[in-house]
Image (cartoon, rainbow, N blue to C red):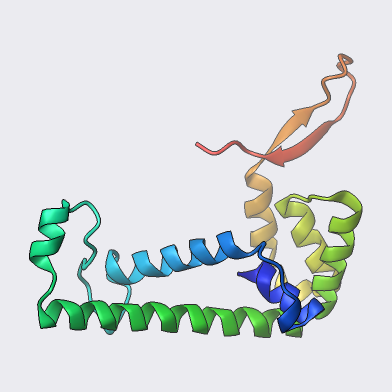
Length: 165
């Protein structure tokens, strides 16, 4: 969602692209899982109300009651609340740290992509209070050396993100 918020800040709310559609899908799916499957909502409580994994017949048989519809509406409202709250939180963070946003954008225009360690270094240069040593250590621990494939053994290693497992 941060990319969309950054576009709104830089270009204006009426001049955003469709590039953030996948971000919205991921945010929505995460909020939905939190509420419906993981019991991470005070209003729904510690229970799984997802119909995921049910056959169409089971879904049809378990839904349709007033209680089921009310619970589904309550879950939808909770998902909307989480998304709106996080959107506002992201907007506040990026507005307050516009200088870091602009510097990150400048580096991305020059280099096209950066890794997590480079990102944290940029932010740390602008506002050291935002990046703890623990965060830098954690990102460094996730990086693995990548050696130049030019054939000479003297080449220096470059860090890159470790492959996902």
